[in-house]
Length: 432
Ligand code: SDX
Image 1 (cartoon, protein in one colour):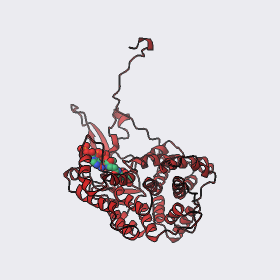
Image 2: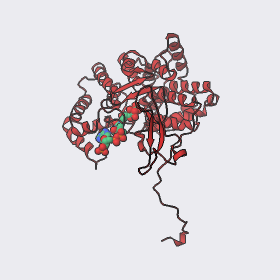
Image 3: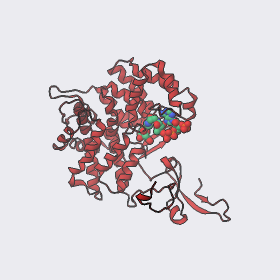
Image 4: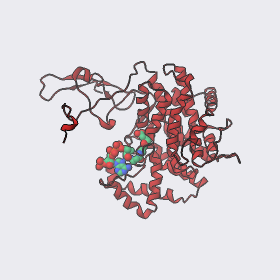
């Protein structure tokens, strides 16, 4: 593999400047341009970061062409089949699979951080009853830094670890409380004798009048969904968390920024948008009309749940979720669920259409996740909240990785300025 590249102006007589290459453990090499502006007065230009590596990381590896996703080297298919979400959270956070003692201790720590400060309950009450739960979650998570002054020294590794544990543990409680506010039911406290996923379902669907025993298939489906959504390299929300963290903002503020970024329908908001789209399509007979809309450049409509910046063959998570959605619908909902049938037909028709094949637009993780959440009686506006719960361990793992790097510095991209050249101020009386 070439170790050096040379950059020279078209008419230059010399060899130009030498650019070194950073070689990865796996994946594409990267040309190191860190000194390009200092030495040559040149910027690189890459809006959308199509060809930019923003950092080095040891956490997650994706090969978009081969449909490979690995957490700390372990293939997502094996983790999905064998692991528990808390076990995967430990792996992402600490870099190795836990032994039974480590797993038990970690599970205990997370379980005993699931309660919220009692004063936070009033916070939920301040929102209008129909506030979108993502709006509530952004606000509540950002406010956590007002409660944890004991662990805000971001230069203290132990403070960073406690904050990571608190965030992983409290996200389900905040999510469930947001849902309860939407349905005007009392907030249900976490139960320490339930697993992470069972606890979330219990906090959402139990009431003071009767307890709720989550269905084993529902717990299994949530566990799988959370593993598949736990991390994904330098996606938009993770990059948001890293950039916010680079200014040394506190971890709760950084994760609130990540939640805000995830909310967009081009990113984590797509799962909710998929179900809304399937509802709008309504019937198989309308699929061709909507596929034409998706292809029409004058129409802003896109086929939600299709396409990915990195995966250009298939999203391995979508394949796993397609199988799980069939199982959940057979066990928990009507197996001939019209929405699922519509999704299967839409996928089948789109994947025969040249427009999608030429652009390598395949179903992504969000295409099937919403169908499973619906089968678990989770409302559409809670789908991205579920994504945020699962992704929190990825966000905090990247934040921990960045903050423990002694070379860490504030992220501050430059630009190609295309605005007006220097001009003098015109007093108001002289303006036309
Ligand atoms: C997630 O980054 C991650 O890892 C994200 C994620 C994670 O785990 O963190 O994987 C989670 O966000 C999955 C993506 C969920 N979003 C959606 O399903 C929304 C629909 N998808 C698109 O918005 C789009 O595909 C993106 C945002 C996912 C990717 O956008 P890109 O890489 O910038 O691609 P693009 O917009 O430049 O599209 C390339 C071409 C364009 O056509 P041309 O200009 O070449 O003619 O494909 C077209 C686009 O118009 N296109 C679509 C389309 N997606 C892309 N056309 C119709 N429907 C679509 N869904």
